Image (cartoon, rainbow over all chains, first blue to last red; front, side):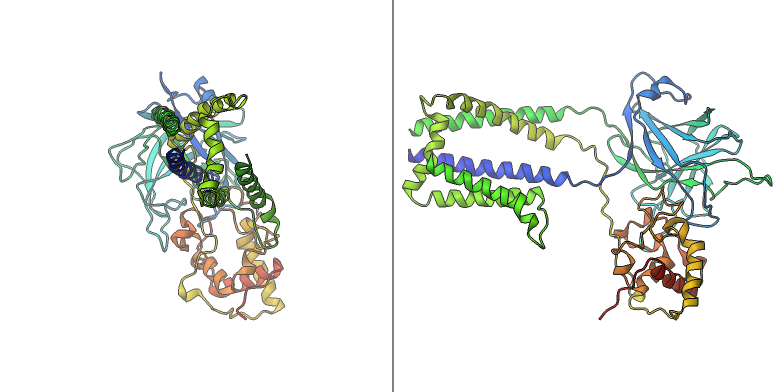
Length: 275
Length: 238
């Protein structure tokens, strides 16, 4: 009886510690902060690269982000047309496509929209990578589309007044307007040869993304109401291209189940021998 | 069953106390589940130590468990025994899967709402006298420069606020400017979002760097108007 008791004590002590570690580890994970992110699922059999109205978009999960007038820096604007953008994305392991969708009552040549990303490991201020006083920031990569040209311009900025088109243009875009709604598709390779100026998208990693929209309408005097820094902006949110499916979790679970069964088997044998 | 019954009752009583009684004791707060688990483990360890102090109590404590696991002719308990043998490996497998699966949650960014100001901005006193005229003027500046985001009612709900994360501060909330000195507000207005230290996540803040556009005297007047309008008083050192 006694040796069996000893075995059991040891086993129980170890088991309790292991279970406690699991529970505490699991509990600390569940405190994660609430955030909103765009997710790009992996698609096989072609991306809707040039088609804002492709049926494939209905399978992508939409994320909605609120917009504010740009007030951080003059020239400010106090009111903007677009209140929300709906964003969808997908990728095929090589290219990523974003669909930006928003309500705009009028279709104007100067309508425009943009995506913004942090470049590299340093944090960048959401207002064009504006220099921060106590933190060394990095540049931003901006994908800018304008209705007039229906093309994307791949741009870089690090602070106001530094925005410029890149030498290497890696982004394509195409817009479609119907029923008071703009739908614009942006396409780029996940990675490029210019990591100093282009965002590099690694499947599985969350990266920061922000949005901007210009309603190109004109006021009574024929002046553009929204132009340059006078635009609708969002804060930084998250984007992630999904990683290829990973089944290793099932393998580890199977190993754990086998170990637990073996543990039970040994325990019972030892207990029976002890008797 | 007596040697096992008491520990079970004790564990249940401990859980009930931690979960449902302790949070209601004045000055206390609900415990995080990890802390409850830790306390329960300590209780269990105490019980095991106590029960194994003497040979007799040890047998009384482990005996029933051993009978349950290996004893013969235990009747209805036989089914429960097989249930435990099947459920335990499955539970271990499920926990393992859960802890290895990739997280779908974006990285959490903890942000300090009121980080420490640089030394030169501590303890400054407002050089503008708190007269009705100055307060009035400050409220005028506030209406022009601050209210689009912070709101005409000083509640952080201005028409331009909706897209910003973090949201503009609500000055009527007693945990904002009422907890701060005037010199702190002077720093935050003057240097804006980009002036925050790293723990304040300056890259997310839309607050303008007003020193580029407003003279110091206007900023001090805005501070007078802000406290008056939000019905708050600055924090002072007694």
